[in-house]
Length: 514
Image (spheres, rainbow, N blue to C red):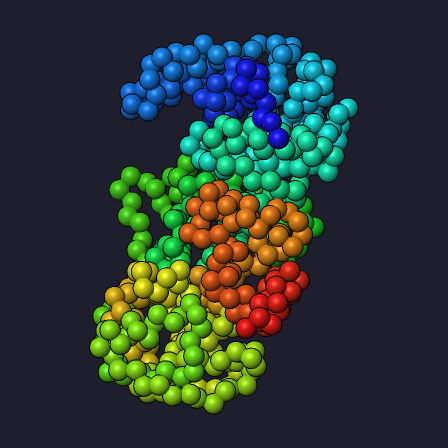
């Protein structure tokens, strides 16, 4: 599909931070840009701010002075909506209120030509609902840029129920012509990124609320073991607890209180207390002058065992561990232990390592380490890559002795890992988070929210995940992901962790091919 003509005018309504960023992107693509804001003088103020940013790009050598001057000559603040009459595309970035957006677009329909593409940058409202008041809803799309728009590559191109396919294709082609990476998605609560990212926050908050680990430790495990750029506690402090909580509650309400999207009570209390993160000086952490950030819980040095037992075949994600252990000088004695009923699905190998006093050490299966029967057990967390990760979390059962825990800690320390010993929470930290992310992504793909490729692209570019969740599921194995979720569901009945139908189907297909 052909993008809008570079000679066509792009109008941006709303001159706040996001509107300014979108205007800058359109200017960089060569368009004339009309910038309008209902507040008198706000458009002129925004134009000066854009000019200052372009000036800083010149100072850094990223833009030549002639390019800056040409862009500024195409930037035209508008005092009235009527001045947008020659627009080929209008993008709205005003307050997140449905009635305000509907009023704006019904007024715009009286100004712009019928072939003008209309777009909203909403992140939380239904594109279909915004378009519902329009005379020509078929030309209306969502163009959800991420902040800061000039820097972040992802744009979600959202099809409302009444959006014409040609309009969506044209919007996607335009975004691509602007040098961005568009992903197409249906009009679902949260679109792709805000829908699929909920478990990253929710699981961490739940582990904290249950006393499994403190925020600094959870953040460190997700960064240093899971490979995430930031932990959820430090990230929500940066975003703003009020903003993150509002998105979570919006998605929860839009899905009619689906338990998978349940908000965090602890985060709600922060919001109620006005502890919103960096912008207020305190959130999960303090940002007061001189305040020290608490460090993660880290185990003291322990002696590694001289040898361990290795029972059955390790799952693919844990396969490097045996070689790593042998490289560290720990003897590995291979043996197959009898299957213990009820621990895993019958078709899964009952893989674990055995420590010198007989305790089992194994990858979490989703359930708590303390079972109703059986001997001492210690679970370790899922890692993005066991060779390169810097930290491992361990959760010992109540039957595990201090010597058992020291042996497990010493073993992973011998592999060059920092170790955090946390309480016996089901699924630890990384594993339960990733399992839920995979399930959310499989569910979205199965429901036609977006293509599988666009889902992974959105999560890598939109929130900097180290892997797309669908790619991650393939790496772990969907059967194991399903098993982790079932383990969580046994310990947490109520539906939150029930594997989605799409995941169950694809896991069954994967299993049949083995």
